[in-house]
Length: 246
Image (cartoon, rainbow, N blue to C red):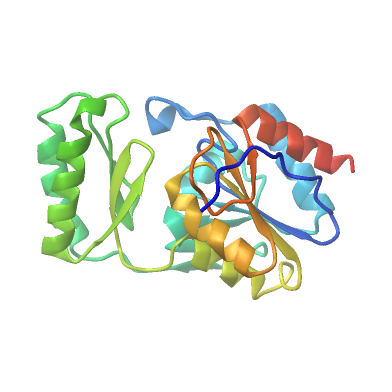
């Protein structure tokens, strides 16, 4: 693990495979997930990058495929959604891991927990269920304890993130998705660069380094597997925008 201050270098459009988280990286985090929406400059930057890099841009996000497409306006065809449980290649082929039948039981329990605190929000992603506590930070311990207990009971996997605890169908994470993309054209043979802000991105930072590339942490410095850091979403978009003119 490292603590970082250096910004990343300009990336080579011809040799790089670019992997990007969404919330906290390409878009500012909002109090509620549905409050994040399209943004013209972001869409233009991503569209141009995807075209100039021959499709070697992929978004790795915890959101559902449909929700990520709504926010990014379809600017990036290649995507790993729900932390890797859904993966779409540039040509449109989609691989989905079947949702665990235990998710319905977990949904009932998490909704019951959320009914006791108006600041808690349950999000159904199809292959996982997230319990957000950004508007109820004091509930963090109770949320994490409840999610861990449900995981032990149901066999579902726990995915902790920034102010969210999630129960998900067992399957690939973001690091696995990055490696899967690199095994197929147009990503094969390129240097992977992963940009993300959350603990859920650490697997992808490690995978990028393992495959000869590097990670870029977004936000405050903390122990991380990334090699470089950008302070904010605005800095990410500026770095990507400079890349389109390189």
